[in-house]
Structure formats: C-alpha cells, structure tokens
Image (tube, rainbow, N blue to C red; front, side, top):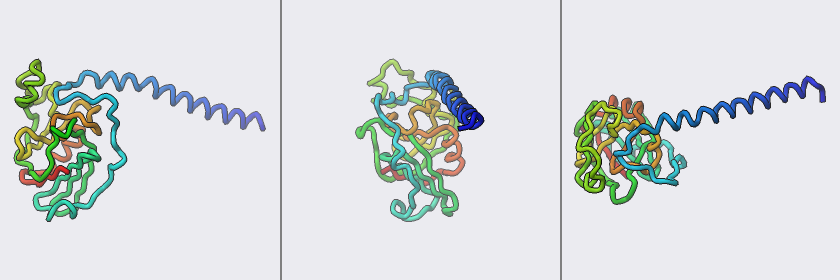
Length: 202
C-alpha cells in the first residue's frame, strides 16, 4: 500500500474522529439549554423512550366522514398528530407529547372551539391538589408557560393542543392530558386549523 493511500486513510479517519469529538462537546451545551424549561405540564417519565416506529402517514378516510373544516387526528400510541385541510391539498404530520397515563388520556371526537395566541395557563383543580406549590396562573408569553406561544382549545374542558418550550417532552408520555407540539409546528398548525376543525384522538 502506498504512503499516499495510507495518508488519505489517515486524514479520513482523523476527520471522522474530530467530527465525533466535536458533536460530543456540543451535546452537553444542548442539554444545558433545555434545563431551564418548566415542568408544570407534567414530568418526563424516567426510562420512557421516544416512539418513532409507528410514525407514518395515514389516510383520513378510516377516521372521518369528510374533511369539512379540516381534520386533526391524534394517535396516542404513535405519538403523532395528522392534519388534513378541507380541500385535502394540505397534509401535515407532527410528533407530539401525549398524556403520561391512561387515566389522563381522553379519546374520541371533539373539535377546535377557540384559537389563542400567548395562552394563559392555569392548573386544573386536580393538578393543583396534587401540586399545591404550583402557581395559580402563568401569563401568556412567559418562558415558564407550559402552553407555549399558541394553543387550540378543544370542546373538552381543560384539553388543548399547544406548543411547549420543553422540547424533551415531544415524542414522550409527558403531559397531564393535553397534546404538545414543537413551537414551530404549533405555529404552522395554528395557521391551518380554524374554529370548527374536527379532532379525533385515538
């Protein structure tokens, strides 16, 4: 083997090692930047893994009679939210956070009844009873607000589809009943959905 070829291999190996080392150095900074986020919405269950195995596109027909006013399907098992526009020209698929337990999970048909920018967060009576030290209210726009910058209020009391500043929650069982999205995803969905958009949680 020529010295040139050895040299080429050595350079490739060095570059690969350097890239791996650099990404290793970046990881603690990323983790550190996420530590300041609130845990009001619910703690992340230790050992819970993200679920990407069932994250796949779906057709709307098995779940809705039509896409009138648009349609949102939330699949609790695969931790994914599907959106279809009324004219079916737009389809979106987003990873979500879902409730931490079956007791907090609600399934069935509902709809978007209100769209709120910078929503105010208030703990439910049961959340306050379990966590009496939690604040009674967190104003919209606060970095401690677990609802993020946008929320779609559902016809079920206390249930929302909303953003979250704590990106660790997405893809996990980590909420007290709501469905959470990355902030850029809820911003997009907020612009697409409207009051009257039908919602199904399965």
